[in-house]
Amino acid sequence: MGVADPVYNSPRWHRVRMHVLQRDGWRCQLCGEVIDRDAPARSSHSATVDHIVAVLDGGSWYELDNLRAAHLVCNSVRANKGRVGKITVRYQTPRAW
Image 1 (cartoon, rainbow, N blue to C red):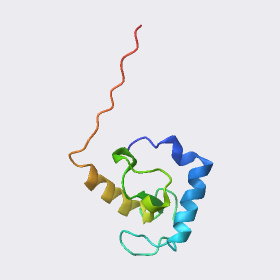
Image 2: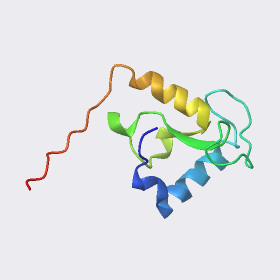
Image 3: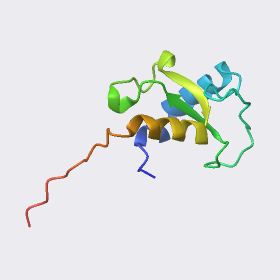
């Protein structure tokens, strides 16, 4: 599992996330099933918000038209399918000692 972007811990993201979950009626827009509001964080059926166009592909972090409610498992499966063959290697220049 990759490192989470700090945006996900921001107050703005938390407000947008809750807005999207409520707008979508706490229903996964990928499988159509109800999202359990009480599911433990990081469990397969916990609530996430899916970026329809991934941020890495130019999608907006906060544009409501680019966001939809999803189960963690549904979001992960979709994201992994979209990333096949698009793996990006992030290279950091070594520090000069």
